[in-house]
Image (cartoon, rainbow, N blue to C red; front, side, top):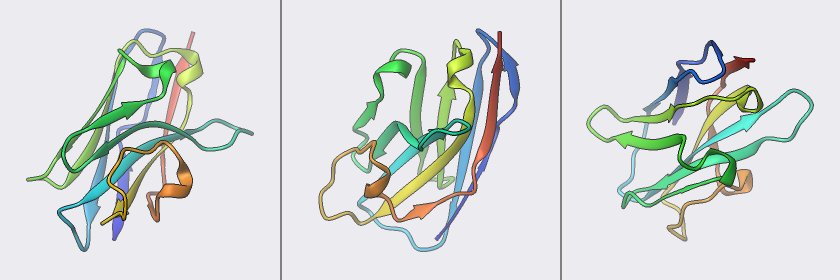
Length: 125
């Protein structure tokens, strides 16, 4: 499995970005995917997660501003980020748990076994 993120950029407060994560390799009808953020010097933290039935979950700080989605035809995961704030700055990673034993959205990095290389998002005030 290979995950490749794109779409990161430098934007001003209040701006929007859409991150993409292209997925290649083996697939499964049951999966859990997530977006994680890591700011300089901080641990990697979960931002949003989606499972194969479309159920999603978000960290409180992004609720109402970020939307996670997956296009199965394009085999691509997205994160639409609106009303960006400086505290959203960081490296964003997508992650995949292929055919998980428990099908539930997860914001824990321990849940995932495949990771992309990350894409940088910088929000300036």
